[in-house]
Amino acid sequence: MNHIQQSAFDLVAGLKAGQFSAEEVADSFVRQIERHDTAIGSFLRFDGQQALQQSRTLDGSENKRDGLAGIPIAIKDVICVRDQVTSCSSRMLESFLSPYDATVVEKLRQSKAVMLGKTNMDEFAMGSSTENSAFQPTRNPWNPSHVPGGSSGGAATCVAARMAPLSLGSDTGGSVRQPAAFCGVTGLKPTYGRISRYGLVAFASSLDQIGILAHDARDTALLLNHCVGHDPRDSTSASVAGEDYLAGLGNSLEGLKIGLPREYFNEGLNPEISASLDQARATFEQRGVQFVEISLPMTSYGVATYYLVASCEASGNLARYDGAHYGLRKTLPAENRDRSENELLRMYRQTRSQGFGPEVKRRIMLGTYALSSGYYDAYYLKALKSRRLIQDELKQAFQQVDLILGPTTPTPAYKTGEKSANPLDMYLGDIYTVIANLAGIPAISFPAGFSAEGLPIGLQLQGPAFSESRLLQATHAFQSQTDWHQQDPQMTPAGDPS
Image (cartoon, rainbow, N blue to C red):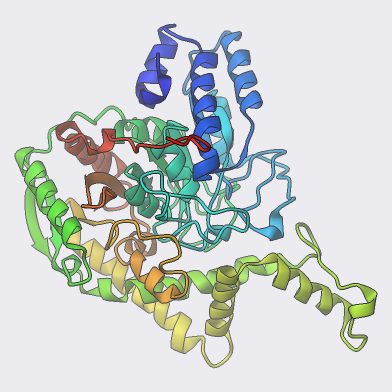
């Protein structure tokens, strides 16, 4: 049996029924990783023998049919796993061994999931293409000359390439949803506070949220069931009880109202994505959905607001990486030192200049400038006011509609290197995703077609706070009528001349 083609939901059912062993499942995915990851670069660290040993131990235990027992899961390298390197794809933390598990990893251990390894990402989650990793690029399995999106590029590609049935990423401005769209998988950013951020290395603390990448809404709901819950170690963790997200997937959409913001259909939207939106609307209408045209004029301020807020918070969060406490520490040889320079300041300068990559430096400098005396009111304070207006606008919209439908990205995946020389052009690719992070609401990207070049197209549903069940229900209904989420890229193993 080819387990890599099975959904996580079906793998759980088969393992519980004793149709196959956890070791057989793990072996299938380990072989797929060994066959294809050299060409794709999803994983920074992968230990196939450890995964097989975990599954053998599980097969021999009495609780081998609990929770996610035997299901392989990949973890983005911004989430702490005890006694493993958590590098955030940065030279700054390339040798940092986490002394503890993130709360979400604790929950996965309790559910008996099998850890496959840590996935590649843009450095400190700053980027939209996974080209900013300090260690390796990640390639889109649908076309290796194109980017997979970011910053959770490794987490998305390992699912798309059938190297893992499920993975965890993080989403600060679209870092789960955008790579999900580019790679043809389903990506959920939950409500801010729904999943504990304890053990998630901070980029922008008021925006960061751990998210899920899977093939479909059902597998997403399955993993979400094991990740949510209040955590006293995270002061931003919501005191809201979790739900059984699988329970309502089959509910009718009859009477559901979905908003279509007129601002989403602008000249910057790729015509093929616009056509996919039209087709998706027809599919939803067949299920009884009513569409309502709405207006979200603050959308045009989303990117500027986001990059100011995120960069300012990053400036503060990354100040701790100075070479004095942990991580990289760089000093010049004695013969190259300027004797007039303070020794401590020299160490700080060397550590930060060599430890951070260009994109991280760019955002630290932007944030530091916006927070500096004389500019705080003009930039950061104004961004906070804009953020509040965006939140208020969405609250008003959700008084009219239950969900909002739109593109996930303005275009399908672009070529590697195409936007590297123009960061602003890359930032504008986040126009449809940053709003959900600024407002703290949940959003999901799901496959909805392909471009003429054969690249996946993703669409996005957004809902009010804590409406994950409704988002998953609507996505599941769409996927019950379509098969975009079941398509697989045609990959040639590294070294195979065919």
